[in-house]
Image (spheres, rainbow, N blue to C red):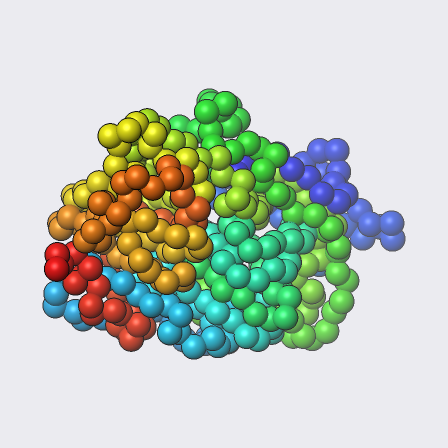
Amino acid sequence: MPAYHRLGQIPAKRHVQFRAPDGKLYAEEVFGTEGFSGNYSILYHLSLPAQTRRVEPLGSVAPRPWQERAHRHHHLRTRELKPAGNPVDGRVPLLFNDQVKISLATPVEPQPYFYRNGTHDELLFIHEGEGVLATQFGELPFRAGDYLYIPRGTIQLLRLDGDRGRLLVVEADGQIDTPARYRNEHGQLLEHAPYWERDFRKPERLEAHDEHGAGRFEIRLKILDEVYAYHVDHHPFDVIGWDGYLYPYAFSIHDFEPRAGRLHVPPPTHQTFEGPGFVVCSFVPRKLDWDPDAIPVPYFHSNLDSDEVLYYVDGDYTARKVEVGSITLHPRGWAHGPSAGAVEASLGRERETNELAVMVDTFRPLRLTEAAREIDDPGYLRSWDVA
């Protein structure tokens, strides 16, 4: 969430001489979006940030689309994906369009290189695992339940304790931010927002690395779907200080303050982030509709302008029975809602839920990948059959 932050040593003014104790000039870098009109930060490096020994093309990581003929609802059993790879190359794309890509990663290896997504903001949801996101902005500790926002262009090294975890990854063709309706004209979160500035954790423990070696450090840069290995002589985390509005941050789903009503409240009530052509919502434990005649599960609805993706994190889901880690896709054009018998079963139950889920709604149609086909549950359509 954009708010001014600074770490380390910076000069009193921008674009002036700033020297090390030995007299060497630090290299100033403006790290910003929308040319020179968007959010930005200013970083001061020990080495020249543009230095490169050589560039090696590594090929494409474009999703392989599933050429399915039927337009239908889907249930993806992601627990069937075999844990593999590191936090970057272990990502398995499952759903995508030209604005957003949704992947799942269950890494079992450390990340052996630095990584920079040059064209997409990233939002990682940490379902399982804990560790540290190290970037040129400093270190950002994380734990299960955290969202990690990583602006495009950030050089990242995700260190998972024990090298194992489970990550839901959203890549956006543009900036991911908190919803505009939660902020005033100055950018401050309003009183009715479901979180507060103090809930967002910022980078800490900035350490300027001064290691060198001819082509010693590898940074893998992704531009659109093409990946390149940049071999540089200096450690990428050589920043002595920085300040600004653009940097990674962490927000825990457990810090999202839920809203409830006498009757059922719609999903926009749970919105947490927004990006170009999509929104992200957090469903957390909360009280349910308390009117005696209220139905405490969602009503049937047709997505006429959006596709709905729901990732099941934890708890019991009164609307349907699915395993933790599953993903459902309810595309536009056909109604969806509680499974057969769920409405009657919900009546008379205690009016609260312990469910935990992440939802991504996109406003352009999503495509499934070949990897999604391998874990698709063909019997999902039968969940609405009445015996």
